[in-house]
Image 1 (cartoon, rainbow, N blue to C red):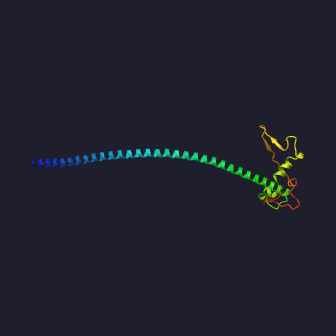
Image 2: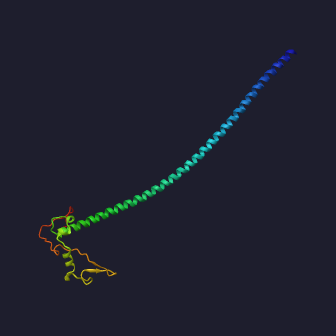
Length: 188
């Protein structure tokens, strides 16, 4: 019986040790679970904040993309207007260059001056205001619509009529050989 009691005591002792170990392991497991739960909560908070940040960044990117699209449309509109203005002004410049070439050729044809049209002043060309005004108001040049070569406006202000005079009528000699007065070719 004493052996049986000793075995029982040994068995109880082993059971108490194993129970203490199990309780210790359960306590450690409970600590680990609580630690894992706190870590999980922290990770969930981080993930939620990153989701919010991603959402804000995607909304900002969408806004910036819309602004960029609008700026592209404005740029294309302004570029189209600029191209149109450039082509229109180029056409106008070419047209005016052609007109000036024609006028220079006509000047070279009517005048026998050796100077360029740009260099000709009133004194050099032999045209004086007295001659031109005398020619404008001469009795042979009066028209039925104007009195004495003078135009009258609605408020009866008197202003002289501007006329382009041929070099021969102004007394300019035209006996020399004609030459173009610019780099533009003369009309033949």
